[in-house]
Image (cartoon, rainbow, N blue to C red; front, side, top):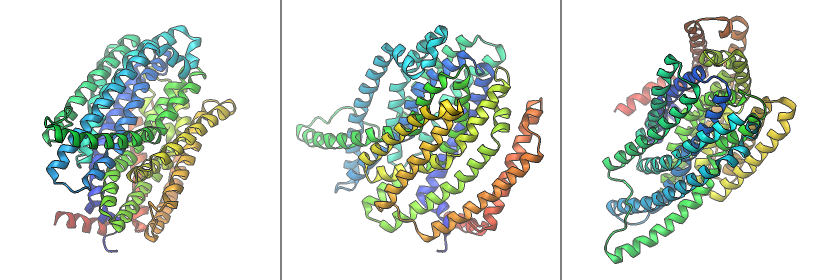
Length: 547
């Protein structure tokens, strides 16, 4: 085929949209790293840091569940199914607005009630999820107080997630991907002066959570404005004519049932990574002060490629697969999936090698300042090296789940996620006595590969994705190029001094930047030499798009 993957990447709407989504996500993740660096400097890996990060991660779990797939995975198939019925575009758009308005009311009522209940019973929640905090009364009380504030971020993020799902269902992804910039910017605005003024750590923790709630309000307002601008904002009231209202109510009831069936499955499917990390905090809390903080920073680095590559591709792939399925275009459907998964592997494998083999210099360069000690860096680097082994599995899992959601296989997703979560908990309980805090990361990695393998088997056996010869040949070349990168990184580690040998931050940063730049050059040259993606194909694709 003349175009090849590079041409498809530039020419196909789904992959072009994924590049836009990934670009905004990359900017957001960079700001997120700035935020985490400032957190490490101001709070370090102390008891207050553990309390704050637990409180922050608790509602953040719901943000990742809702904002990075659960709502969109449930709403888009419902939209596409309704869109396939015979009616004009204006009627479809009006029906979608009433349906999304009904779902928004339900989400708001549910999340607000849940927030109030969790706030009342927060001592029991913290005692269950962070049992190790019970040994230190001050840490336990602070964690409860902080969590009671943070949990009210949940209704705000539910509103934003629904509005962003509406935008993505209509093909608008830029605002959806850019909204996390608001949250990261608000936290940085608090952390930056705090790092210069040496603000009291306890006061800083409460101030950060207040800025979290303020950022949630701003995000909801921006998403509201985005839907208004393209005239797809959810309508909260039914139309006035009785006949029209009765007919619409039947559609709403049908679509609400379909949405919440998929939504419950999506909470398990998309939340596997987040729920696993939340459960692992239980084990980390029992291993001493600072382990939760070290685990958090290792996870944040792992989330960078997952957010840029996997979440971006899954968010765009879902509506594209649902659209092609509704149109009955089987050839285009299979071609889109083969191209998307090849691109994912081409990005995930070198990212895993880079994070795993350069874990220590990365952690030291980014976080070992101020209150973040060398001991905390060693812990975080060990956790990151193990978690990096699971990066290809995490990267493939989200798009595979998007395929199942596009085919409305909610029960399958829920079953796979349940068994994976149970497996993760059992593995953590078995491995932590043997390997200490490293056992937590090992459990996550093993469970991730098991979850991805089971999901891939279901997708292939049911014929939702048919692997073609070009994908297998390209995959073999990507593996070979990744092996070349791995050999280069192992050789470099023996020659180049580690970042902790340098005292000044700019020296560490320069050394790490050179390592990453050289690694990228080696991989790109390997890929070009093996003709996985050629410059000529990229040029032809670019000219074709411009034409």
